Image 1 (cartoon, rainbow, N blue to C red):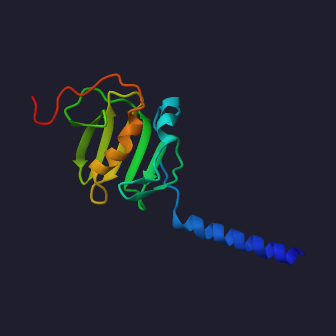
Image 2 (image 1 turned 30 degrees about the horizontal axis):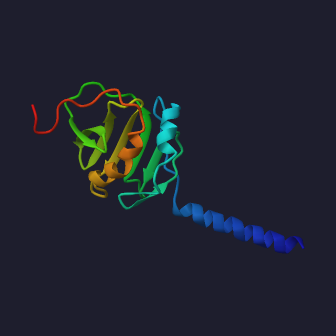
Length: 155
């Protein structure tokens, strides 16, 4: 009786190893305010798919990742940015500062929300428009305490 049970356990263990090999955990560092309960309001509802990329597990609180390798990384609890000369875009009521200094990898940081959220994305793999369309409605749950005053094309 013991041998058949060990055989089944070995088969289950082998299947689990095979499944975990398909999608590894993304190693990230939590943001300074990752334990803010308002970050849970965002990350508890992260979608399974963003811009055609499947969600992956992360090892840090208040984070999310999509794609293999990760093409989109979300971190909640970053320090809210102050005044900036970066371009500001509004999507679904959320202002985003766009840092394209490492293009085609972009850093988008919510502006006027506390805690702030950062999204890193690889624009060679995903469209920033699709990513923000998928995630801005979640970030909009965070309290608004400011907004961008300068917009592209305005002075």
